[in-house]
Length: 148
Image (cartoon, rainbow, N blue to C red; front, side):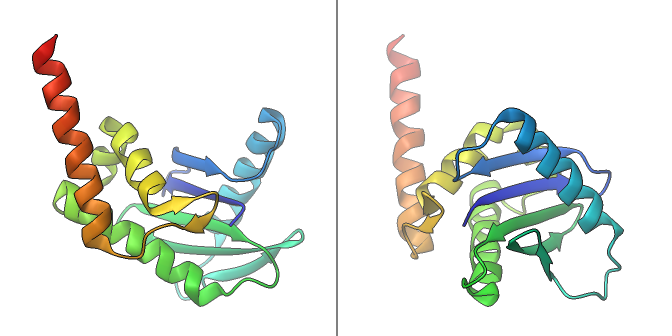
């Protein structure tokens, strides 16, 4: 996976994770172009599209679009499953995740993504193990807060 973007129906970027080195200028250009492209598509259209030399896989959950760029030889269905698994993890952690959860707890959303994906590859397939790691990190954070 090259990158993952989460954005709202209004085109506001909520989360971005890049697994390839690009300049900020290039990231902004890609983001702007992709957000416009995906938002312009009709709901019944396929969730896969060829863009530049990449394949874009996206899925809308409520008011958020989850958008991933993958290599030409990568499997689109596995990418859709990765998106779905990430949404399930967010749902389990936040209890029916919504856009506001991502906005106000973006560091947790990034942490969950980092526990699940590493370098653009699935690190842990078990939701239970990912959630356990997050709970342990939360516990450590609480202990650290109480010590201060």
